[in-house]
Length: 423
Image (cartoon, rainbow, N blue to C red):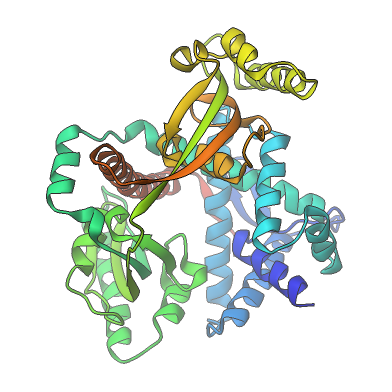
């Protein structure tokens, strides 16, 4: 029973939208998003799951009208991201969904089959859960892909970062309330948002629970989690956030501050020192089918699946890498990437390679570079050398900029999209 309850909470946290195969013939449209619609039944199910999540975390529920509004806004944001991903030709393979599902099951100490049984025992559709997983991966790809195109990190930035010794800072857990504002917002819109955030700040000063106010008022991505951003390295926070919390004590919250995406209030929920002195390195080889004007994502998926089948039948990985891989630097070495820090090649690559056993070959998966197959050859822990320090600094700056860019992009596409809310 505990495992089933854990899965239910996980489902509510991971997604806020559950669809079933059987729908009533007539269903009220609660919002139109470009050419798509969100139905009352979808909203009701999403609200039901979020309600279970909030009760499970002990967060006081806001009035139903407020909860409906917040959940609907999340559904709208998700739909806009999916539409953007479809326009950009983003694809999600079955292998990627399988990997993501296995990760969820593993985190709950379940096999994939056990997780499916737990989900279905809650009268939820595993097929729809799988579809939701695919949508979440697609949304993550478009967010990270577009943000990554805009983010550059210079050597000078790395030098300044290391000079400030930012790698030795703390990990923090933050609460976040956002009142959205477009970068080109008019004066009356700014005044309205400022009045709203000032009222929220006064409520906090009176002792009102931060998570309750975040759930009720915030436009942030984690509003329905009480604004909880989870544990993050302070060096990877958006610059504005990092500056605000430097002198704060646990339990304190900031005055409202302005960024391109709106007005923010932050709460320092907890803080801990980063104690990790060694860094994990991996030795691996890979085969890459690169994105190009001549090879569509669908064609790339076909090519990589064909190569994967040949490996499964016993063909030599090194030889196939030499013949087929588009990574010119590693192809001549049989795909050998040498020793590297997994995050060096991006979050998706890191997630895959870290979960492999030695000598294990991954299923095909997609990153911004194209389609990959990876074989892990070894693991080791290494001292943090100057080279690795610079790499970690670059990664921290990149993550910080990515977070800022994603927040700004979400605000922008929400403002530009045609949305007709009918409740």
